[in-house]
Image (cartoon, rainbow, N blue to C red):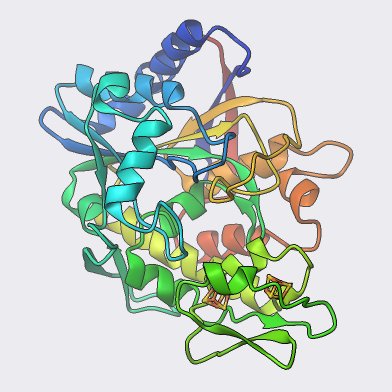
Length: 357
Ligand code: SF4
Ligand code: SF4
């Protein structure tokens, strides 16, 4: 099946007021607003950006999505889930405070901000999918409870999946703590004794106290490790290693199955907006300011997360390299697209429609 994907070009240097109006037109004129009905509790899924990150999707591009939902007399709330690793986003209290500091508030957006899986990520509802790896998946309560969803995604590279975009925002971003743990269940890193300088930084950040220093280098206790990847991100000596080939494919399939849970449960009442601006090598979970790896392109809108992510790969390709290649050239992002198509999450075939409002 071929699906229509709409591309509205803009740059972050364009006047914000003008871009906001154009995004509202995109939502209204492409028919995506018809997915929202009067009185729908509508979750707007975003990423508020990790503390220290400055390249997350700014709140002013989320505001027009909220405005259109309100114009349909529905009830929007802007939301994300808690993360597994130690962070200001690992509990709802700090997460909401950070969201406010990053410009996501009732005052700036005109909608309340919630954390969809509760104070510490325990609030979930199992959804039956009967997929090859999981009979059911564990998704944050408020995504399941809400009547419709608008998914606002910031396209970036990703250190485990190559591409961090729409499918990942759905499958990992809407999973509860339990769902995220299942997705990471085989991703266990190892530490190189030759490279490790026993600085202890990874010990400080490990959420499960799985790392200790023995014989002048760090070691990981696999019984305690949940595979969150925080030690990999934080080590400055390149001492932490993952078996990417095995783990990336498994993780991508797990993400796709969790995404399928949301899509099945919402029965078409989802609209996707994926922003190809401020594109960085790493996702917005990383703390440090990041450099852009590509110039801004704009925003893609449609009904199909697989088609949109395929379009992101295609549109970011230049001289044989796309966003994933420019970010992590040894990690293949296509398993999420192929597996997504295989189990019915969506189609890689799309018809790109350039719009200019
Ligand atoms: S952060 Fe890296 S160098 Fe420091 S103890 Fe951990 S693995 Fe070793
Ligand atoms: S040792 Fe395991 S649980 Fe601890 S930070 Fe590394 S991946 Fe996460």
